[in-house]
Length: 255
Ligand SMILES: NC(=O)c1ccc[n+]([C@@H]2O[C@H](COP(=O)([O-])OP(=O)(O)OC[C@H]3O[C@@H](n4cnc5c(N)ncnc54)[C@H](OP(=O)(O)O)[C@@H]3O)[C@@H](O)[C@H]2O)c1
Image (cartoon, rainbow, N blue to C red; front, side, top):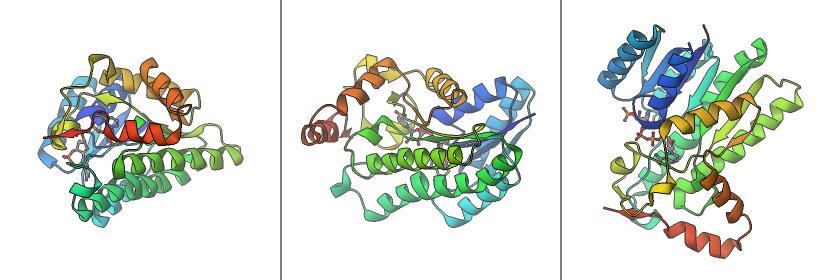
C-alpha cells in the first residue's frame, strides 16, 4: 500500500487529508505536537479504514522536530503533505519577532527540508507527490503570513520545474492555495472571522478533493473554488498598490 505523510494531521485541513487518503487506501504517517490527539486520530483512522497509521510527535518549529520528521520521510513515503501551519495574533507591528521567525521555520524551513528529504526516494522510484499547503494569502499582502505562503508557492513551482527538466513527470510538487476554511486556525490565532461572508468559506473535503485532482493532472498550483480562482485572477489585474491596500485589511480582525 502507498504511504502518505501528513504534517498537522490532527485538525482542520490536515485531518481532512488524513481521512480522504485513508479512505483511498493509503497507509498514514501523522505528525503534530499533541501526542494524545495524534494517537486518537491514528486509532480512529486505522479502525475506520483498515490502514496502518503511525505517528510522529514533533514540533516543526524546532530543529529536533524537523530532524525527526526528515528521518521518517527518508525511510520512504509516496505522498508528502506539508500542511502544518498557524497564524499569529496581529499584524507585523503587534507580534513579537520570535513568533514571526517561528512562523518562517514552520511554513518555510520545515517545508523545504521535508521536500528535500522526500524527493530522492520518489525520483528513484519514478513516482510520488508533494503537496505544500500555502494559501490565497500568497497572492495578497498579508504580513509575514502572506510572505511565507508566497514563498511556498514560488518554492513549489521552482522545484516542480526542476523535476520536469529532469524528465520525471510522475514525481509532482504542488502548492495548494485555499481561501477561508473552517478549522481551528482562526480561533488559535485569535482572529475574528464573524464578518467573513458565507460564500468565501470552503468545505474541507472540497479543498482536499481539488488538491488531489490537481496533483493527478500535474498542476503546480491548486486554487480550490471558483470564487477564489476569480479573486486570484482579478488580483493580478488590479494595480499592485490598490491590491496591497485592500488585501492587507480584508478579513484581518483580531480578538
Ligand atoms: N483554515 C484556513 O482558512 C486556511 C486557509 C488557507 C491556508 N491554510 C493553511 O492550511 C494549513 C492547515 O491549517 P488549518 O486551518 O487546518 O489549521 P488547524 O485546524 O489549526 O490545524 C493545524 C494543525 O497543525 C498542527 N501544528 C501546528 N503547529 C505545529 C508545529 N509547530 N509543529 C507540528 N504541527 C503543528 C496542529 O497540531 P498540534 O497543535 O498538535 O501541533 C494541527 O494538527 C496551514 O498551513 C494554514 O496556513 C488555512
